[in-house]
Length: 529
Image 1 (cartoon, rainbow, N blue to C red):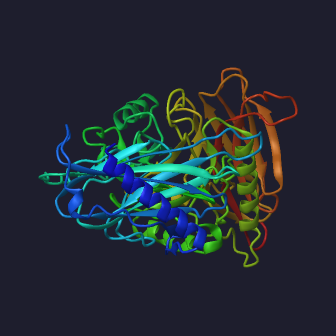
Image 2: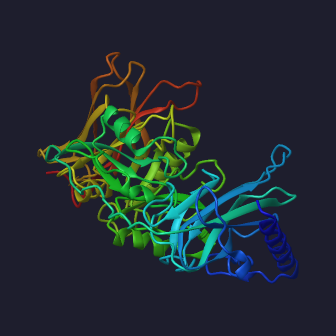
Image 3: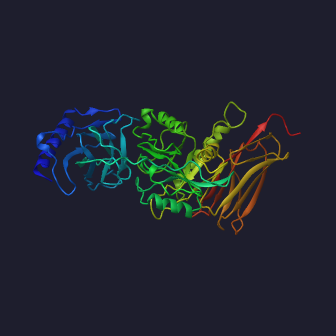
């Protein structure tokens, strides 16, 4: 670093520190604060030369205190003629006692169009996944969006995820590189339809991460893993960025539908935007107390997607879902290998089903949320497609797959080796399958039938109703079998099926091999006959 850069660094550090002490930091609309502006103007700031061509560099240091706002914006004045905006950053990670939060600092970028919530200024996010990034008109670091580096005030978003008691010292270096700009590439997005098999059961994984956020697999590696897992569709769900929407060219095919979306990663929980229009960015900079989530849930739906809270009871910091389920279209009750927090999510989901069928309006179930399962795979040895959501859809298309998920015509399985058939039939031959509704007299006999293939030898079937589990029986050692059970709508308002492995710990539930959405049994007025 030159002496000139060191001098400017010291000046900026002193100015930022003084402003913090005097409480003069400017509040922004995005629940954050704005630091002093980094300026590259002035005759003494003629671009220097180097192996990267003409460029200017500034470094800013500061310390974020414990209790800092969620987002701290560092404005940068960008002059004319800039071809590349590059950032690197570091921060201290002092040791802390057990049970005390240490330092973790996320980072992102907004261009001259501003940091307004839901605005057009978003240019990328990498969270804590990388320590440097750059954007140009024709390219960008994964997680960031290519496009022109226009003059104006840009903002680097510093997001203190956790702060140690003694504070979070940071250093941000900004380099502007000057020169000609290449034309921006035209975005190429995945098609909305694959060949498919007509009306059929299609297997998918809607929660995956690549190198465009905090994953370690490339999109090509994910597509290959999806095919190896027997999947028919996947959803691109990077944390707080849409940069991967254009990264799948040449990876889709007649056998694989690729949906575009986002994992909206707030400080009060994560939610999947599944199957949104390509290029649609959904903001994440709010907490439950801000009462803004409904606005962004509606944006997801306007973009053609589904709102699916992810791992709602995960134990990682900021992962626990606090926005409620009123704005959801489905809920992820199974995330990766089965864990106790999945068991809690399942119990909460089942309680919501009970509430839906006991609505005071009568006439069958009220609004209910289907369950989905996804791998949330980031890197080896995470298994893509463990679990997977198996959806009955009219075609292997974005519209039909999302319609099947929204209607609950789906079940969850640990792999493509396991298949289920589940439904209910009354004495008149009327039938309802998964997510469907069978209307019969309250005391009319109904036969519930589950057929399982491809399970392991240790698996047990459990049929669960609004009264709780009412039938538990082991599968044959072959892992294939048929279970039938007779009930009435008066006795069971819905029935769903679980296939579980033997418990790893005696007395505790075993991990899931498969789980169905319910079949509803609606009681008609009167009695049979």
